[in-house]
Length: 152
Image (cartoon, rainbow, N blue to C red; front, side):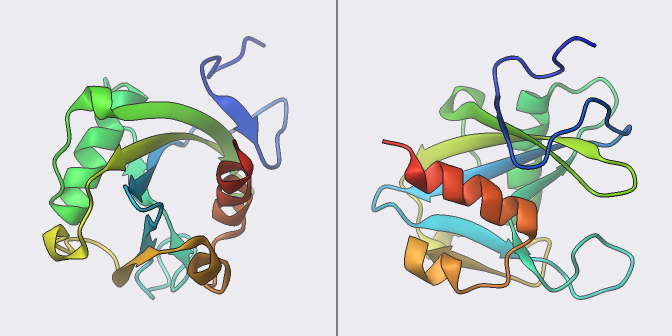
């Protein structure tokens, strides 16, 4: 099988096969190093209710991961950034039994919590590493952030 995401570093659990779900997520990083995290709604019909994760969501038919991540960040936070601001960094498999493929991007920007309009989710935090490590993070998000923070 060909690599579905050759420009992305593989992170976390990985299998030779994966299900049909494709998602695009972003690690928005403020200039001071804090990252913007989303608290998931605490409702039973979504994945990881009440846990902390990254902003983003499903890739729609005909979309590239890059187009999807720009759209998702705007839909969920009201933040608008040019497509070339998003750098592909990691791919991760998650979500038994379907094992979907997640494309994860990095956005380094002048972020201010006052600019975030919560349009989806139960809340958000602009958190330092030590603050984020104390949150109830979705396991694959913890894996991705550990790799993210360990980079030079």
